[in-house]
Image (cartoon, rainbow, N blue to C red; front, side, top):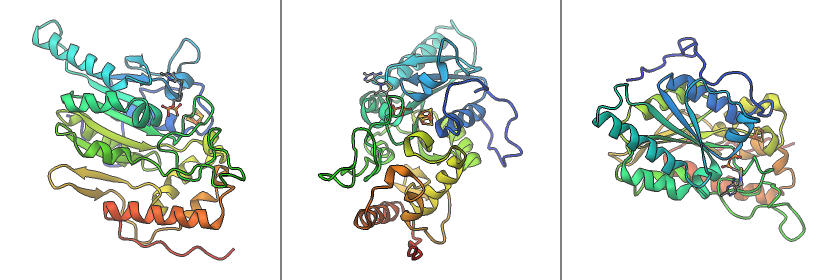
Length: 317
Ligand SMILES: Cc1ncc(C[n+]2csc(CCOP(=O)(O)OP(=O)(O)O)c2C)c(N)n1
Ligand code: SF4
């Protein structure tokens, strides 16, 4: 059993994701990896479906993990993890391995979790494999040069959704809600939560709860990407906090028994989404009517999980 971490000061000193990787300065997903690896500890195997957290971390011919790691296709992170889990179970049953059953963690991007990889993810959860599947959500296909994915917000600029006279908002579609897809219809699911790199103790404890669960666990981590969202490298943590404070991203644990969402951060007031959007150039083209649509969407998502705090009207500029 992995113990609860009471504070940042009491977090383990050991790093299992060490310095030396070609991620961008201020990379949110890199920070998520560091926190996940710290929380998980030495008895861990990572599976890395193709994406920034494979390519940027391993360029070229090396890698920053102090624990075993294997590359997977972007299509099949869940299936590779299933195979590793089944192999360990069989080896232990046949007495060919006398070590402890490892923590088996997939670190998939939003493309590798919500889009191209969703089939293998859902299948692994249906079969009840004892794995922790993490989606680090940087809200685009980042490694290929920032293209829209199903978790890219409405109105975000990407190279596949440029704003122009025909489509002034850039991206017309609203995002897929992956944790809710995973929360429902997967009877073997044992743990599900959302987290953010800007709330590191909460994140690490959710990793531990996911690993302690005896069966499939899903953790969805908001991980701001300064390159893809176009904001300064030193504002990653601020951006993650603002996402939560505006309700653009909701932090919770899902209670399987009751179907309720247990909120991880109590918001007294919600900041207007415009305060978050205006700091990222990917939203620079949006008009007031687009921002209103975004606010209405965020209000509805907040209501779904029981966030009662109403948005404060934006200050007049
Ligand atoms: C089957 C397949 N299709 C497309 C690609 C090209 N590809 C490489 S990295 C990548 C982006 C991955 O996006 P995501 O999973 O969101 O991770 P990120 O790069 O954002 O960290 C894509 C599409 C691939 N490697 N394999
Ligand atoms: S593009 Fe984004 S996710 Fe990829 S390494 Fe840079 S900051 Fe990290």
